[in-house]
Image 1: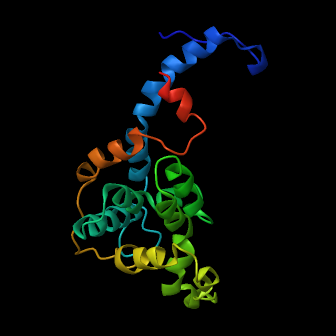
Image 2: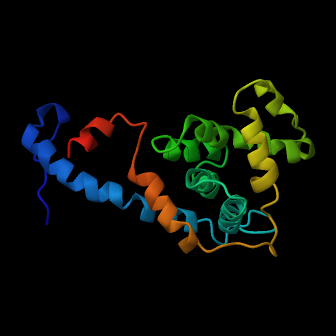
Length: 193
């Protein structure tokens, strides 16, 4: 068994306690891709009325982006864009963007954060919503990127006959993207290790 801190309140913690915690932190962070894959697999078999299950949709969105020559970070965003569906059906994009925020560019983060509104262009009118809700963001530097993501990758990724690569195809890039956080308050502490 690994060493454990002994405090009962953080204000009572010591540098030695945090040395022990830091020793556990690195392996925990390194295992994040496995936890993300396990959570993605929770979407398997969850159709929610759609033509393909949410797992297939995620893989297919990433497959389309990969085949179109997008960089690894973009492909990982495509893979994880709907990972929040099981935990946050009213704001799944917030969950995905929170997961991705430490490791992706501002442009990709904004794209994932807003894809739910942009994807609505294709179906909101069937629900009595304004399909042009995305227009509130016209003029934003990442508007076109997000519009394109939905048009090319998210919107058409409900085809049971389309190419859908297995998760093993995306695992190495998921590991690489999550290996180096760039937007985290813990970045400096991790660099000191």
